[in-house]
Image 1 (tube, rainbow, N blue to C red):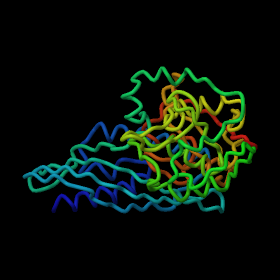
Image 2: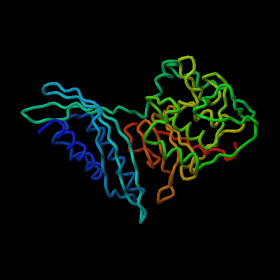
Image 3: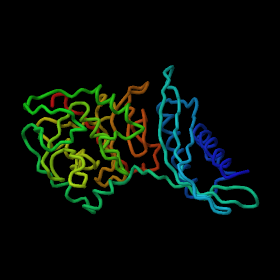
Length: 340
């Protein structure tokens, strides 16, 4: 048996694991106890969530792509991309969810048989964009917004024309087109729009793009810690505001802004509409680390979301199926104003 056969077996049994809510299918050839324990916890949460929703899994399929492999005698490290599709039902209504998962898998040969010794996710929903973290390790600047009380203005000389082909700076107020934001989210959920930077942690950058596609006007200040803007590459550097690319900053800007583009916090997820935003604080410490956009509703009328980092399409909003989720997780449900 080759290491590739073991890898394909892993993918097949991973599908079965998610259908059964059990790691049992992986035990014959996965020896990474840390990974198995994290999956046991995740599957338990998912099972309870699905039971509460009356959601019943029907099928799970995965397409494996080996991105690269370092082959040594008896030891292989492979970077893989898993394109996953799962289907389930609530009542008579079928629901399809899709994800892209990137993993680094270490395989070792023992007595002529290959085992999976280590599985690491290459995308995390807990981190911050690396460029921003390098610029501000403690993220303190994100709490120091100077928010304009007037409607944001479009600054013609500074915006990326590959992002916005033409600009209208008349100052007219517009409306938020929720369906355009959703269409953008559904078009680009599994890939990066080349008009923008793709961050290693890309969730809030992606959500900002969706909001912009829905008609939200950029508020260009030229300062990283104020406004909401994306400039693109200028003098060899990528330039953007924290609020464009960092989850904590984005939710702060949406709630603090009083003119034009803004959001109102609502108390329950079911109150959100398509094109609204959810922010996630995994540790319950007031630092929001992930952002999603509502793109559909399930059979119970609850939000389904799209996101980047772990690229997701029509995923259930609570994220209890994420290894990032903890018992301390808090959410902010952000209803985007219809008039901008």
